[in-house]
Picture (tube, rainbow, N blue to C red):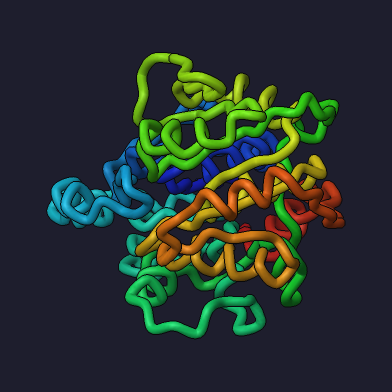
Length: 329
């Protein structure tokens, strides 16, 4: 059997989940990997057969998407060319993690594919989401269309939705509390974060920055470039994680029983939905309309947080069920 696994390369969550799923897919046959996008800091250890430009949102430095750089990064001619030339008929199973080129190529060539992603969960009307009009709703539904859907979310909101894929390297960590706070806010410049966190001097802040290429310290704030191993170590030993409205990062913090505070990116509908779902569980959120973050962050640091999430390791069974149900033999 030949399998194509197409992965979105914007942000680190998709790649991190893929590192867990790839070895499982390889048990069922010959696996080719396709990655499109330009914003991930985490890398795969397996060879990538198709590295495509795709369509990526570019992180800004003020809490949202940089629309101008995103527009400059678009290459519709290349997208169309890649879409037409992918040899999709060679595969018995095409698995898509919110990757647009292969998804639209399948649609163009009349080939069925299955989405295996957090975004697939939004096919259910039962998934929490804010009642707002947002152009991001259209992007979320049209960005990477597939025929079948297997979703992941913080809760089992529907029959085809599973709890998050927690990487083995996270499950195998010993969770302790050394008192520091871990920060990953890729859409915010680290200088802005340093200015905020130095106003809460009684704790240590470990900031992983997408915008700094060197490590440095200012007072009680330690900043360094994104590094998967160092981040995992910091997360395992922190008191809490302050991060964006992504999915994998918050899920891993919840699995490790850490305090959690999220600030979803402005103009990013999926992150707004994730934050809205976490809010339903009583977890704190800093919305884009909030101008003064300091009181919220101080309150989060000074008070305990209780939550109970059960994220069992079901990934192997999910993959087995998917292959048996959707592979064309």
